[in-house]
Amino acid sequence: MIRNETFLVAFDALRANKLRAFLTMLGVVIGSACLVLVVTVALTGRRYVIAQIQGVGSNLVYAELVRNPQQAMALSFEMTPEDLAAVKAGIPQVQEVAGTRDIPMTIVVRGVERPVGLVGVTEGFQTIRHLVVLRGRFFDADDMQSHSKVCLVTKDLADRVFPYEDPVGKDIRIGELRFTVIGMFRERVATFGLSEIQRESAIIPFSLMKYYTGQEIFQVLYAQARQPEDVLSVTRQMEQVLKSRHPPGAVYNVQNLASILDAARSISRALTVVLLVIAFIALLISGVGIMNIMLVTVTERTREIGIRKAIGAQHSEIMYQFLIEAFLISGTGAIAGILIGVSIPVLARPLLPGDLSVPVPWLSVVVAFGVSCLTGILFGYLPANKAAKLQPTESLRYE
Image (cartoon, rainbow, N blue to C red; front, side, top):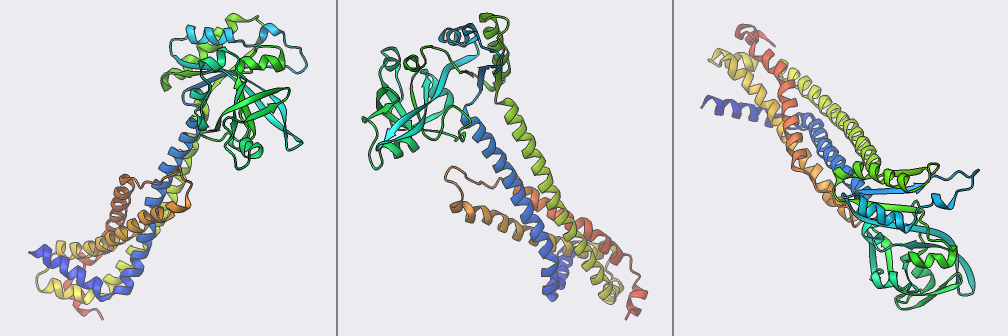
């Protein structure tokens, strides 16, 4: 009963000074909204960046021959289909393998020659690189074994050569050979020309690259590990397999995406810490504001406190009254800030890319509410304690 009366007294005191309570609450609103947004943006950004990197190829290991421009490379140094078979057969943790070779080539579009990237690939390339076939199909085993003159083209190349037409089934001349287009594709995650796939590229069965180069050698050899924890082991074993099959002078650069993922996680953690510090500073400032206003309130209400003590209010009741006032300010501000923080991602969703969603994690809501309320109570303790320690006789004489 006493606690209910104390709560009502605290509530009435705030209601009597609505503007002051609102201005005091404003800092908590901003701080709690910042906390929700910081945690949401940090988790969403981290998930998005990691998904983008993994979209290039999950559990991916790749090898390239290190070339010295001042030294001629012996043909025995080059990676071949036999190396591909040895990697797949010799490393149990490997799920899929693929090899590629790309060369610059030209096509004729409406009487004008245009550069195009020609990429020879093996059958597992789509699986490893997560290519999305927009129309038609990818190569099958028959295409590879029968040296069929078929190809897939990127969407940009299809739009360039066959504007307003379905490219599937059409013929395209690349260099000296004519191919039938069996599919149109894109990378699941754009590599912006940093891989063998360019904006305007055509991929063909690897066996047909011999018509252009006279050799069956790979520029890049890919292997996909079965599990993320197998990536480092596959990287080491793949390097050993290549070294064991080639002369001692051959040097291979065998890498994986683990280092890029680790770097992305580190950057994400650093940004999260910086943003959290900013949010906590906002809450700290709001806490100082609560303390200052509450100290002013205690001074203004000294006579009221003296009257309450004179009619029997205990030390704890006075402290609880002012702590409840601080809690109501911080708690209400936290709820308002959380609602703002949750609504911003919802309102911004139509403006975001189609593959990016911004779910608000429940953890951010709990943390924002808890920290905001705790800030109000901690910074409200000093004014509450000061009010509780006032002597009734001195308080009643205060003007």
